[in-house]
Length: 128
Image (tube, rainbow, N blue to C red):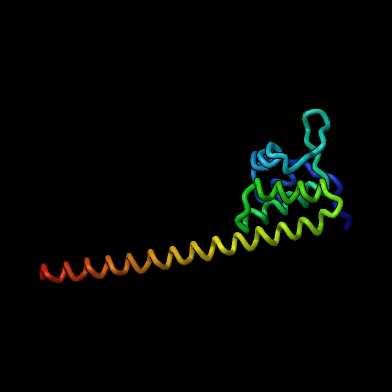
């Protein structure tokens, strides 16, 4: 079985369970650069891989700007791979720190809610 060399927007949308509008949105942000045949977009294997990486980056919490920065670094530098990996590593570390802070904030909020609930239950007992 040979892998396709080109894809239509509807084929990619179906494969990745996206709307065609989402794919055009990524194209508008220069994350995908399909060729054109008249009004028809023709996506390459590289575009398919890029789309897969965009979706993975979004799942990891990266913004489209950060994803584009990584793509641009790969495209414009001779040593893109090493620089791209170093930048990705730094962004992952930033994301982990942000998640840790969010987790700490959630834990503090939970404690505050538990305290408020306890005060509320104690006040309700006074009505009995």
